[in-house]
Image (cartoon, rainbow, N blue to C red; front, side, top):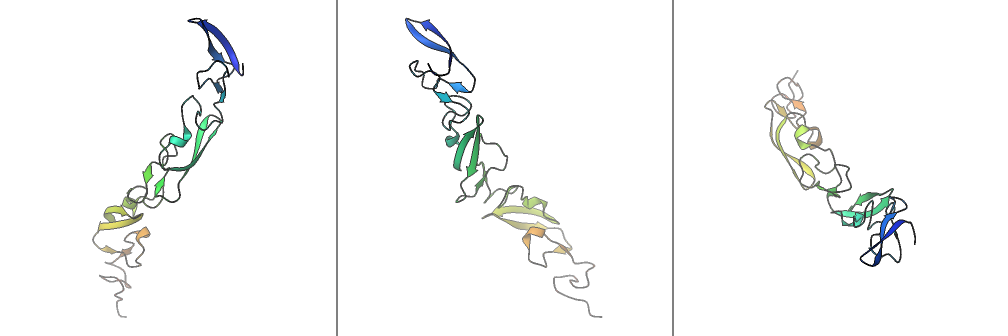
Amino acid sequence: LAQVGGTSCSGGGCVISSCVSSNYGNCNGAVSDGCEVDLQTNNLNCGSCGYSCAARPNIGSSSCVGGGCVITCNGATPYLNCNGASNDGCETDSSSHNNHCGGCGNNCASLPNVFSTSCSSSSCVIHSFQPGYDNCDGVVSNGFETVLVSNALHCGTCNFACSQ
């Protein structure tokens, strides 16, 4: 029998008591084909019998390498694997997650001089900001970057220059 380390008799029939290595498993429970599954490479029995890499949520593809799942997220959806773990698949909806907006680690709340933010359609939306600052360059990704109380090119408001 393939990869079988030990057998015994139970209830008048042969049973597999162990495989030659923990890298193999008797996943179908049949004695006739022994420890038939390589748990290091089988996508439907990865690391242990019944653990399917393909069953992880929101993935595009998966494979079993060294007894662990390797996943790729489906590029057509906003779901990403931001925690780096394969067991929960591509767990983060980057179209609406404030800490992973449009990409892993893109935290809307960490933008300079902003108080309240949200993520909508994979883009940060700023709801409130620190008084005395504005977004004069129109780029959301650098927050409210312009000081209005001491900037001669943006005095009190964006693009209002002080005369000399």
